[in-house]
Length: 94
Image (cartoon, rainbow, N blue to C red):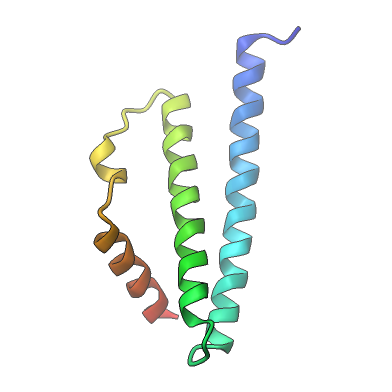
């Protein structure tokens, strides 16, 4: 049987590995977006990138909670319009 601290360490390692994987997927989607910037799949790439970003932010929030840091929900609760604006700004930088 594993101790609580061992389980927490496993969870932290899993979160870090998952964030790294999400970052890789996001980078790949950004590359596809750049190649097809004016194509019909532009909106699809925006949606996928947004989904990855939301998942990453959720994992970062969980990671902070595990580490005992204070997490204010206001920092992570965005309106749909704010999220769309954030993604559009990120995509414009590409």
